[in-house]
Amino acid sequence: MEKEVLFKKRIQDLARYAYNRNIVTFTDFLDLNELHILNNLNLRDAGVTCRLFGGYEMSERQIAAFFPDALSDINDNYIDSWKFPIICLEIVPLSPKFAEPLNHRDYLGALLNLGIERSVLGDILIKEQSAFIFCRHHMESFILENCTRIRHTQVMARSIPQFAQLITPEFEEITGTVASIRLDSVIGLAFKTSRSSMIGLIEGGKVFVNGKMVTSNGYHLKSRDIISVRGHGKFQFCDILSETKKGRSRVQVNRYI
Image: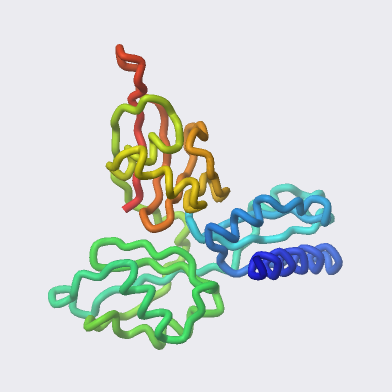
């Protein structure tokens, strides 16, 4: 509770500073719980507009930007064209032939062991033998110089320009039938488990829909909703494909790899 109070105060301070100084202010990367808290704050009363971006479409960890109304009212396109303080680095093995298979935990652990705080790091996307790391722009030089080994594999880091247009997550397309478009049913399909096994996760506050915590098993999903389940992963609910003769819905979800 104390951590939540401090986080709300920090958000309010950034919003107030943006309004009073007529400048744009940014947070560090926010996790799912922080995004949920932010989404439930009424910042319009503070005279600012909030926008979120994590480096690519549908990113999980995101930076919040606060635009004072004096700027956003002049030109609404001003917000859309604003550059967030995010850079993307690709980490690749020096000798691909001898590289170990590495996962998300390996890359994150190596970066944290360098003394980097988690809040300045965004999502990590694994692509075959390389990884794309999103981070605050001021960390670029440090990571380029110091990230030389992941576990036992010698690596090098390099900057990726124009990354927002180039980097897209990979996903597994899953189709199946569900009794209804309830949150618990669709999660069960996405993670290939029973609906009942997901109830504890939902009620325990570990499921987020579009960045907002949802604790109701019967929450009705909409097309293109992004669902994140802590400890399991993330997927997008695409749409209802058809109805079966028994009244079940055949649906498609895209589960992120």
